[in-house]
Image 1 (cartoon, chains in turn yellow, brown):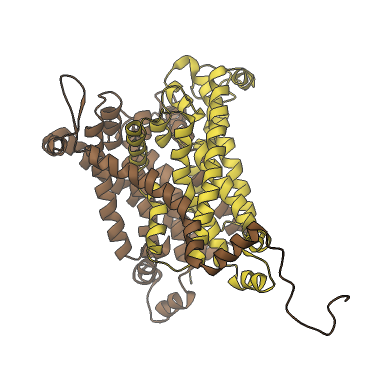
Image 2 (tube, chains in turn red, yellow; image 1 turned 45 degrees about the vertical axis):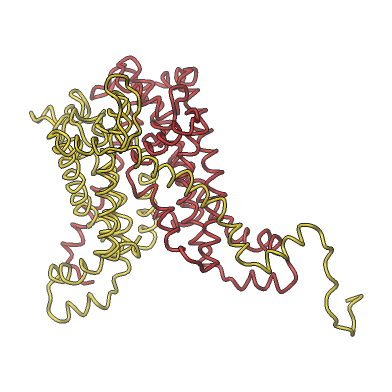
Length: 266
Length: 303
C-alpha cells in the first residue's frame, strides 16, 4: 500500500504510544511493590525488598498461592483431557451437531463470566455440593477447555490424516497409532495449550468468586478482599506482582512454543 | 533380512491382548470410536455447563418468600416484572450496555493504527515481537491490571502526581475511569483479530483502488474497512461481552453500579438467587442477539 512518509511516521508513533499505554500500568504495579512507603503516593519512596520478604511469610498469601496453583493445575489437567478429546472428534469425524460443539465449547468465554459463575453456583447448591477447591476446578476447567481445544484443533488441521492411515496399514492398532503418531504431532500444541489454560485459571476471579465458597481463597480472591485495607497495601502490591508473573511467564512460554499459533484465543 | 524370504504371505497376526481386541472392535465401529471420544467432554459440557445454565434459567422463575427467606419453586414471572418495572434496574442495564458499546468503539479506534502497522508496515521480526507483546497482556493479569489503574487514578496516585506541577488533575475514580480501564483491559482482544484481518487484505485490491484514482483515505474507507469488518465484529464480541459482565472494574475504580454489581449484590448481600438469575438474563439475551448478528456478519469465520 502506498503510504506517504508522514503517514508512516504517524503510524509508528501511535504504535509506540499504544504499547506504552498497555505496559506502563503493569510497570506501575511492579514499581510500587518495591516501594518502602506504606502508602501509594507519587513520587514513590525508596526502593526495598522488605515487602517481598514479609509476603513470603504471610499466611494469607501463602495459602492463596497454594490454592491458586492447585486450582490451575487441576483445571488444566481436566481441560487437557476433555479439550483434546473434543478436538480429535471434531477434526477427524463428520457427524450431526459438529458445528454446535465448537459453539458450545466457546460459550463459557463468550458469555459474561458472571453468568457462568452464578449458573455454576446455583447448580452446586441445588445438587448439594459444598463450595471449595473441587468446585473452583470445575468452574475453571469449563472455560479452559476451549483453549486446549483451539490449540489441538489448529494443530490437527495441519497434520495429515495419511500418517495415521499409514500407521494403521502397517499394523498398528488405534491406541498404538495415537501414542506413536497423533500424540507426538500434537505434543507441543498440548504443552502450549496447557500453559495458556494455567495462566487463564491462575488470575481468574469472576467465576472463582462464585465457586470458591467461604473457606477457600485463591491469590486473586485474597487481593480482592484486601485491596481496600490501607495497612495491607504493600502486601497486595507484592501479591499482584506474583499473580502477574505466574500468569505472564506461562503465556510467554506458550507463544515461544507455538510461534503464536492458537494463542490468539478464539 | 532373515525369516521373511520368498513367501510374501500375510504378516503373522499380533498377539490378541485385550487392548488389541478392543482396538480392533473400535476400528470396526467408527460410531463407537466417536462416542468414546465425545462421551466424557460432552458429558461435562452438557451436564456441568448447560445443565447449570438451564437450572439457572429455571431458577429465575422462582421467588424468595420475603418473610421466611425460603425459596418458593412455584414458577412465576415476578422477578422479571420487578426488573422491567423498576426504573433503577432499567437505568443500570442501559448504562451497562452503553458502556460496553462505548468501550467497543474506543477499542476499535485505538486498535486500528497498531494493527495496521503490524500487518502492513512492520518487518517480520518486529511483527513477531509486537504480536507477543499484545498476546501477553491479553492472556494474563486481569485483576492486576484493574488494580494498577487504582494506583494510577487514586487521589494521590501516579497520574495526579505527574499532572500536579502542571496544575491539572486526572479524572479520578468514576464512570470515566471505568471507561478508561475497560478499554485498557479489552484492547488486545480487538488488536489481534483486527491484525489478522488486515494481514489477509490482498495488496492487489489496495493497489487497484489507488490505480483507479482513490486517495489513501478513500481506499481505507471503501476497500480496507469493508474487508476487515468481520474481524472487527469478531473482536467486538469479546470487548462487548467482557465489559457487559465485569463487576470488578466498577468496584475498584468507581462508585457507579453496573449490571454485574447489581447481580453480585442480589446474590451476595440480598441472598436472592432467583432475582440475580433473572437480572443476569439481561446480559445473556443481549449477548445471544449480539452473537446472532455477528454470525450474519461473518464474524465466526474471522475468529
